[in-house]
Length: 157
Length: 468
Image (cartoon, rainbow over the protein chains, first blue to last red):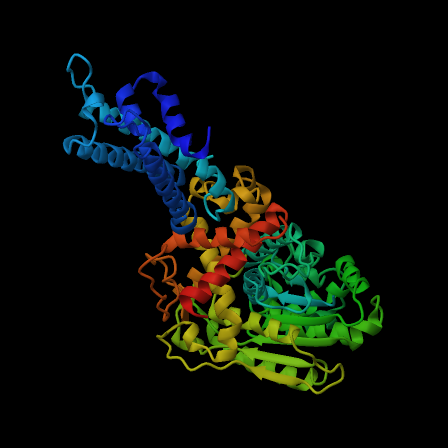
């Protein structure tokens, strides 16, 4: 596995729970219906990068700018949740815009019997996975950042 | 380090020593180790008990701290050395009237009895001495004459060393103080039987004599009359002028025109004699510190000092009313201590335990429930009470707001700097404590860490918000 596959691999691992469809996963890996190859940009990387940046910014704000001295644990969880919510919104609205614009190949959107597989509900579930990954990133970054914090070294624990 | 023996004689002596203890706790500088010695025959005197209790709390706090080159905290920096529970006992005054103390009716010759009846009134003769001499220095001079032979005074003389100095605090208008001061001074100068008498005889000695600064309500049952204060002051001053010349190196006088001010209840002594603190007592304590922090020639001419302020009798004195020298001595340490006291009152234990400065320095629930913190809280509680008493007294000294909404809007006459962004109030206090904690290179003991944290944080906040 190389670096460009990390985000997708993590999402696929979580998706063993079957939260979103295989065709959506293929699209996110960059599958192009017209060529039959993985020639499109890997969207997992885009959403992974956005999740990393947002988690980094929020963790930095919490530990080094805001530095709360009251209800520290509560605010950490609030930021954790906010981070997840933001990533869900990014994934959901970006992908539904692509779906509505016809940018997701029909060979992925519909199955052999003509039933729509990639729909808003499916995209919403991918949003959940994206949010979980983002929250995990925030948690890991917290473990690193908290050591150097002057007020929140003991939060979340 | 050299020692400064501070004798506090009578009720005023006890109250001045209370003020001195608070100033030292706040971190006002003192060059020497202070050895407080209270002299009062009234063993249950309220003022005396309160001062002794405070000094014991101070000594307990101080005993848990160490002050090296890497210590920046000045809170409790001066050592208060305890000798004999901070008291010099006066023997044979409990449950005894003056007449029996002198054994008038126990084999004394008739001419001697007649002489004594001439010198002392019948009221004096029948006076119960267990509450002191009730404004009669003529009695005090007889009874207190014994203290130089007490084991405690001899122990004190035994540990007296070269470069140690003596300071005597007394009132001039009472009984115990007015008689005790010249007696003690003459003992130090003229007694050749005490251990180290050579050092004592040559020691640098200073004194503050407190002139009338309050009056008491006229009561028939009491032998204390404030109408007599001025007359007693005049005669005592005449005696000092004639008999104490050249015996001390520094003489401080402080007083206030008592006629314009409120009367205290007329309590002759005992547990109920517990007057509210007064600004004059704080200023008398400054005399002790002035003496401690300056050099005086052992055989030099007596230096006389007075304290002056221009205030109206109805005015409330704040820091801004002092001249720069006094203001610089008092303002910052008292403000820092007030901030610390207010923090303890306004930030509950749960919040304190959630802070990083608390967790990183071992300042958990055990610390806050422990003896050190208990003694510190007792000192802080009395500190706030002391300030409130001075505020409620006349002449009122009220440098701090009592119920300020903002943690830093506590100094009267000073508007704290505002910031629109950033933390405010006690959250800023906690953030500052966290920053100070982070700067520790080595983790000290919890007690020392606590004092270093609050000393550095309050210093930073005073500079940042109050600009001094």
